[in-house]
Length: 420
Image (cartoon, rainbow, N blue to C red; front, top):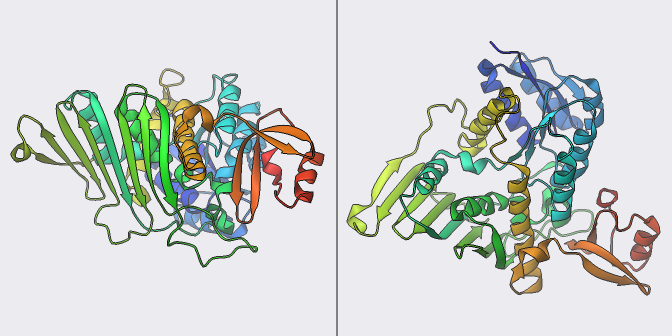
């Protein structure tokens, strides 16, 4: 057997523990989780209990820097809260030891931070970085991707994705209740679907139009005096360079749905549909009409653990491990550029809702001018967080805490250190 590949997990909340379980089911492939890092004692304890049940000795760290310096790990899983991704990735990339990385979606919460990571990664060709957009691996979705790539549907013109599901789950310190931490619902959750749209369309996005709001969920919740601001429903239309269009129909108070995700891809020749968790694909051609529609079962015999995402996380790890063992001859299946574009579409959709108009992809990463006390400052994005606003500065434009103090004195903005 090949040498054991040693993993460390940064952030062992719900998703981090899901990765731990998936890697345990991959143990026969020569992997082991040897360390975790998390500042929260309850998360540490739950991860330790899992590892003990797997008979995996586990070193526990309170921070990712200590884990990096320990030299214990070959591969790192970043599954910490979204707003921490950029700082953690920059620390990993700048560390002398090579650590391959699987980072949970979204890559970062802003386009500027995604680009910062991409630029830094260019200086470390020895590191493999893959983004956890695992919906590509859900068996019915993967089958539909293969059908589209095979040309069965012809040139793709329309992609429609419906996600009708349950509300966001409770996370550590309720970080996912606020746009300033998650990037917003359309970044945090829907980057999966924007990634799929781009994959099916075979083209890059140019314009986004969205309508959404908070109508049902979390309206009676208050955290430190702030009410959650994450939307719970939206329609999003994405236009691509090649003329194709995508539409997302999102509802997060639809627990009564048979399928959580329904994907429809329509080309000049035919139409394909994928249903999750029903795990079927429907395929029909225009010339055959309704009577010619076929229903195909979508299974993948490689899956040893279904988990929270119908086996897709298991397959994601299997593929990433293959790239690691290829030692530079196999690129990550979902690269940093894929992560960037999925975030850019989500940011553009959030901006479209905020501004009430169509937004270009360029706008999702173009600095805005903010005037305070007669001075102008360039920022990437202003995000509402409860009763305050969070600034996402363009890297290198300003780092003065006096600037933030000025804003705070105006009682309009709240400064979080991670935004510098």
